[in-house]
Length: 215
Image (tube, rainbow, N blue to C red):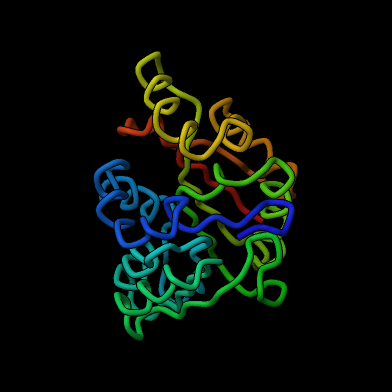
C-alpha cells in the first residue's frame, strides 16, 4: 500500500502465502487479544465512520462492525487477493476498497476513527510519514487513531524474537524505525496530536505496541 518507491508486497510478503494469512496471524501475534485491545482503545460509538487501514482479510474491520450497532466500517488494502478473502469473510457488514496508504481514495474528513494493525512496519520512513499525513487528512476534526504494530522490545527476549521473525522477513531497513520506537514520533510529525503508547503486548514476533492519537 505504498507508492512506487516502496515496492508493493502482498500479505506475508509472498503471494503463495496469502492463503495462510489468517492462521499465521493468529499464531504469531496473539491476534484475538491484541485486536480486542485495539478496539477497546478505539472506544467506538454508534454512528462512527471507521476506516481499517491495510485491512488484510478484514478480521479487525469485521470485529469493529460487530462491536457497536450502526457503525459504518470500511477496509482498505492494496492487495486484491487479500481483499477477495476479506469480502468473502465479511459479506455486506464491511465495505472494502483497494487503495494505497500514501494516496487514500477518500475525501478529506471522511472518517471519525482510523484503525491499523501490523502495517506501518512494512513501510519505509518516508512512506510511514506520508501515510500518517493521509490518515490525518481523512480524519474529521478530533477524529481518533489507534495503531497496533511492532514496537520497541521490552527486553532481550523480545529483541531476539523480532530479529528472528519480523526483521528477517520484512527487512531491517523498513522495520528498524519501529524496533527503535520511532513510530509515535513519525505520527506526530505527520500532524497527529496527543500521540501515546497505551499498551505493550508480548508476542511470538516481539513486542507489539498500541499507539493512540487524534487529529
